[in-house]
Length: 261
Ligand code: IPE
Ligand code: IPE
Ligand code: MG
Image (cartoon, rainbow, N blue to C red):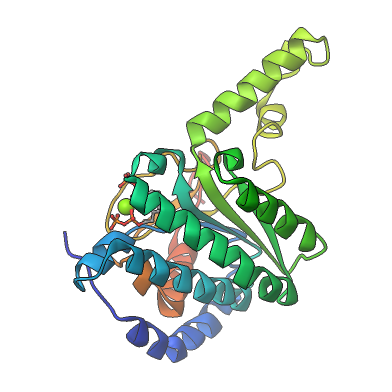
């Protein structure tokens, strides 16, 4: 596998290129919803002889850059896979590092995100986090609920199969109570029971780090998403990569099963 290890500085130096690309692509509507599997933090750190936590820290910096890029490109919805339900299987030390960074991110970034007009949402099993984090997540959602410039969703302790099973359970419970006719369950009704009910489906799903799999991310919602797998490690992902992803999306022909135009 070829993984380019572009430095953060180089990615930022490419900002001018990104701006030009953005202008060039301005004629094409951007994807409404971009979802990103932010992978490769550990390999980024290892390639520098650093502990994995340094990669996670650098990954959090990349999130900040991507929020700015999304706003600049007029993308209304960004969903970031930050922690999967399976990531709880990692060693205790890494879990402590990751939850510590999440705590720090929430305390240091929410006020700025609010000022920038970002509405924050969280999907996933938040109750698995410590109570103070759960409280911060809820506070961040409430503090930003009046915003609409960018809808930023972080998937935390998220697993698509668990999400689908929870929706099925909710439907079964409602049917048992007589509140839902099983015959009335269609894709719209079922989609409304998912944690993503407030969002449009992702148009573009990007995975960094060279891995080509979804790792239990948005399995229902990804039905017709365009997929883009990039050989860049998440901490190196910058505005130029985002601009190139938007440009690649514009070159794709979406058919949704219909005959080609
Ligand atoms: C992504 O980076 C962040 C999380 C999954 C929490 P990784 O930690 O998976 O980094 P790699 O894949 O080992 O390089
Ligand atoms: C997927 O990455 C989850 C996140 C990026 C948060 P992983 O590193 O956990 O995925 P696998 O284990 O390589 O499939
Ligand atoms: Mg990984």
